[in-house]
Length: 198
Image (cartoon, rainbow, N blue to C red):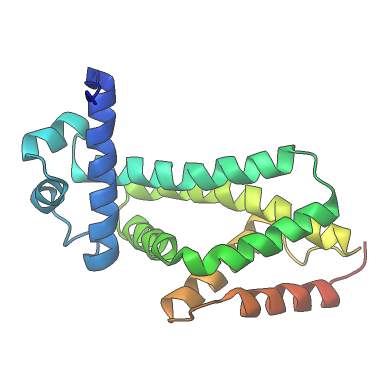
């Protein structure tokens, strides 16, 4: 079987994807500062020149990585909200999402790494925080629907509610909980039970 030769754009996308995947892997294992341009390039199987033909700097890679990472979640939540599901279906969907958090340890580690960089880097901070806010608003809308389905008012505004649950899930994962779903559902159900009625 003859291998199809990739076009220039396809070949560049393959290179970018491999650099992204390698950078994620290194950041999760060693942290952002230990993942140098040289190390990322070498581990991905490319030259430093290939890195700089795709990204202007390590900071540029980081920003695009954050956009890519957050955009997937924003688009997924947006699609769920736009699909016209009933409140009951959305509740089941959120529970299923919570159940999958144990499989997303790498995402939690990466997000915490990005948050730490945002705290220390004045240029990266507003760009990351805008993405994080957009993601939190979408997740918060979904959680609010769950509260409303139970006939309750959420105890805080959408984005704050979502950030609270993100911090809880990421914190549990980083503390070594193999499956944080039970604790997250317990907190969510407790908040719903004690919330004011609509």
